[in-house]
Image (cartoon, rainbow, N blue to C red; front, side):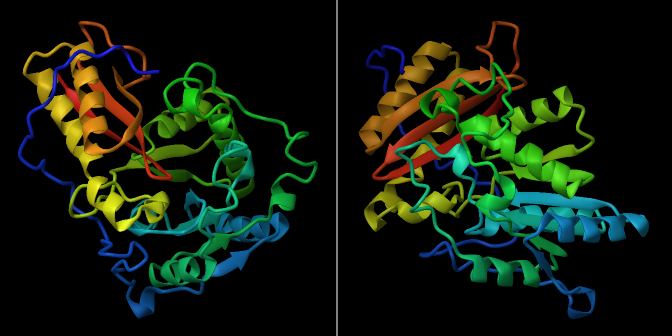
Length: 326
C-alpha cells in the first residue's frame, strides 16, 4: 500500500509542541485520569437507559422544556479524550447524552471485537463526575434486532474505501450505520466527535449533509499524553516497551509537515515518513498527505492539507494526523 521509497531519512526534529490535555491526562495507566468534577450543586442524577422507548421519553421531556441536546457516541473504555467531548457538550447544550456501544458491525472478522476493553462501571462514574445527563447503553439485539447480515447499511462512497477504509473493508459502513441509527434514536441538536479519527469525522459530516440529518457535527481537538501520543482505548494493548516507542508516530507526522514546509515533494516526504516509522519499530499501514476538506490527493494549488498515518505497534493499530497549511 505504501509508495516505493528512496533513502530519504528525516533527521530528528526538536520535540513538537504538544496540544494541552483538556481535562485530564493519563500517567502510567490510561485509566487513571484526572477529572474536573462539576460543582455539586450543578450535578443532576445520571439517567441510564437501555431501551429506546425510555430514551425517547426522556428526550421528549427535555424538548418540551426547550432544552438543546448534545450527544457523544462512544464505545466505552472512556479516557480523557472522550471526557473532553462530554465537557464540550456542556458548553453547547443544556443536556448532554452519551452512548456506550461496542459496535460489532464496524469490526472485521480478524479484529479485536471480543478483546475490546469494556469498563462500564468506571465509565459510569466518570460521566457522573462530569455531570452527564443521560447514558444510553443498548444491546446488540436492541440495535440490530434482525441480526447483522440483515441490517440496512449506510455507506458514504469515496471517503469510506480509502486510507483506513482500504485496510479495514466495511469498517466505515459499520460506523456510519450505527451513528445514523443513534442519531435517529437520540435526535440531538449537536453531536461531538474527536478529531483524532479525522477520516471518520469527515465521513459522518458527509453522511449528515447527504441524508439531511438535522444534527450539527462538531469536531474537538485531539487529546494527547504529555509525550504526544494521541489518547486511544487501544493504547492499553501496548506493552511498556511499545508504549515508549508509540509517541514516535506523532513525531514523524510533525517531521513530514516540516519537510513539506521546507520544500520536499509530497512523495519524498511520504516515503521518508514511512521509513522513519519502520526504523522506530512500527509496521506502517499507510502515511499519506491529503487535501483536508475531502481527503483527495492534493494538487499544486491546494493549501489546506492533512497528513494521516496508521501503523501497527505490537497488537495495537495506532492512527494519528497533523494538519498543515502551506
